[in-house]
Length: 342
Ligand SMILES: NC(=O)c1ccc[n+]([C@@H]2O[C@H](COP(=O)([O-])OP(=O)(O)OC[C@H]3O[C@@H](n4cnc5c(N)ncnc54)[C@H](O)[C@@H]3O)[C@@H](O)[C@H]2O)c1
Image 1 (spheres, helix red, strand yellow):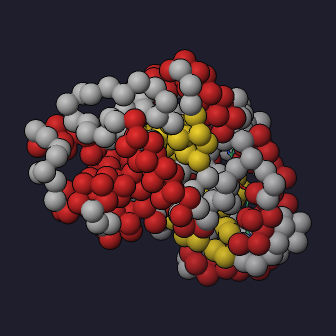
Image 2 (image 1 turned 180 degrees about the vertical axis):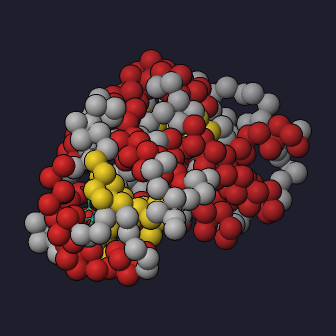
């Protein structure tokens, strides 16, 4: 008969200590169930006022499926309760739910807590409690510590796919020739991370121009493709990702070039959730790179007001950055450091 085991937890967040325990447990039984124990009230209370953003059941469940997708003897299951703290959690009721969800005799329970021994003996008299690295020598970390001190301090203890959830997204916006692309690249170099180029620019280079050749579908493509490039950049980013331009700026160009707003671009703009918006004022010299048209001072000023108005209409809180290139870089670094609590 196959041996069946389970390891339960809140995985709030999933860290390398959990990964270690799950992988070892998977090697010690024929069938392993990873049980995600969750309660909306308790999980929210455990994260309240702490340095981590909300981690919904779906997100944690997905981390576990990502981790175990190629582990043939492992299944992830979820068990919900309504208790609002670890202190009030009802272990008897939880055990009943876990047994029901697994639906077959349980031979092993895995954890790293010696202190769970007594309770497991009472609730699962037929099962053996296997303690994995109770001293936490291999990965000296706990989810409690991460929640209290923040994910950035314990970045190396997070699997890649968990990291990508916590990436801070910094978007750099502004009108033409205000230094967005260079600042985006320089910040990415300084923070040793990825960045997203302005796809609208890439497509214009591919099309060999800009004026008189753009049509509505091109603006939809720009918004979509830019978003896809962002998702790719999150996967490889190191704590923060820098993004040159976003959908509201694309909409601004649609209005300037075609005199109309694009509904597809609008819906992409609706879905954006950047952590920091850096707005570059057009107070640096205008550079004609062959793909720019609005260089006249008066037009530059009017366009700047128009873009700001569009951002304000969407209730975007941006930080205005002006001055020389080094002043812009310094100010941006201060803002990003604050975001990452460095
Ligand atoms: N009712 C039951 O029978 C039952 C059984 C097991 C678990 N549970 C539920 O699971 C929860 C356990 O939550 P938690 O907050 O203790 O778990 P958790 O999410 O922090 O950890 C999950 C598992 O990984 C182990 N682990 C944690 N850090 C480790 C590290 N650095 N190295 C190796 N292993 C590590 C833990 O001991 C635990 O077994 C309980 O509060 C309960 O909700 C219920």
